[in-house]
Length: 372
Image 1 (spheres, rainbow, N blue to C red):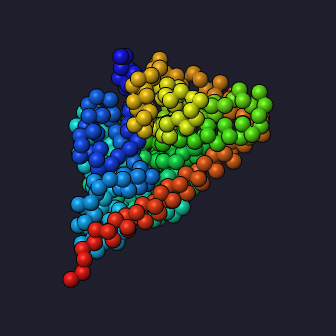
Image 2: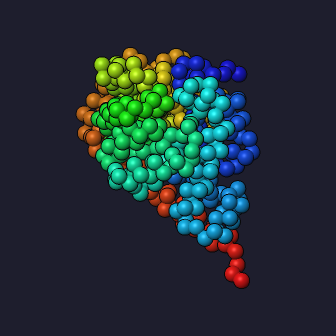
Image 3: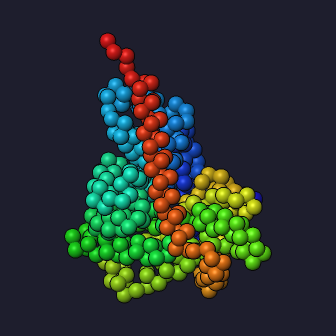
């Protein structure tokens, strides 16, 4: 079998796993994926943790201790999730060391209920960085309007950040500007810029899901010809924006101080529409200095049927712009879609967080010591 994952890695795409659980850590599965599937990082989100904690008994010992201490449910969740991230970071530490800090990283998200509160997001990011206490952690901050200044402030404190829930090209440019502003703040504070890393998580499949739904409602042949084209076009134009920003004089001045580029990260790369090839959002988004964070199913699909044929992004910008323009001419508003997806993304993570609160509270009550 040809090693598509190795070829992908050789093309400059860092392969990260979009999943984490205590079982994955303790069973040796994560270490195996690093060793055999070229996985060099891990991303988490509230939905992933909600699923992990609600399935099986892997957390019972820790939950029993937390119940005995009568901690709040919020504290219990933070103790559980940061423990998993800390342990995963330790497993990935050799990768972190070997790549000079670029990879070997594990992401943990700020409480999604804070997505529209800049000051609370900054405070939470500082707390999470302190709690996990590993140099190879990335704190995830959503790219909401309130998140943008929080990103600049947190980067300015020397904390590495994964900016999440990016859907629009305009917002992505604001994210990159916030990153550069943060580096300038860090430099003014005398911090070592070479120790600060960041990725910008540009969401992919959800764009097609929403736009394809609107295309299907139109039902014309002209519309149907554009199915499955919006997400890849959007991501490719994001890479064009990345190339532009990181070739400016402003960036060059920071790079001379040892700064690292903020890499584009392709998120939400599991295919939602069964009509599409399972590896579509991997094969079509190969570009140097990027990250693709994959659900396990996409990871193994890429290993088995990935069509890695070199850089599939550079030089594709004219066609990508034409595809988005054609979709706009159908009467499908790009601006409306990306704002809807951002709002839905925040709502989904908040709903998962609330589910996590409820299920953890139920577990704490189940495992609480009897009185007397």
